[in-house]
Length: 88
Image 1 (cartoon, helix red, strand yellow):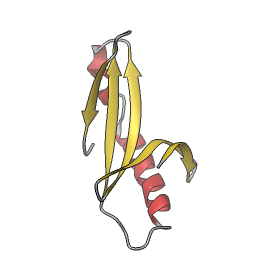
Image 2 (cartoon, rainbow, N blue to C red):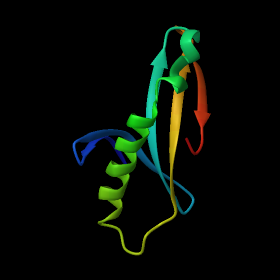
Image 3 (cartoon, rainbow, N blue to C red):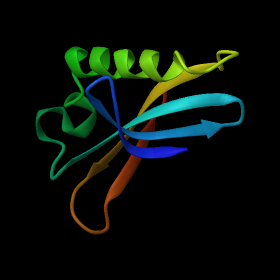
């Protein structure tokens, strides 16, 4: 539905639909899995900011669709190893 969208001062990497669910996606890449890798780089503060951006986006939606926050994480160099994490 959208990519690299600024909402409420936060950049949302992807907004997509999976069936009836509206999905806000944070995309992260790390060269190695050291220090927890890409998923570990999405801390509580970033999740809270994404939640506020999602709430601002949803303020325009009626009726409110079910929604969730996911992460699309990549590790390494080409070819990247991708992991989709639902409900972060």
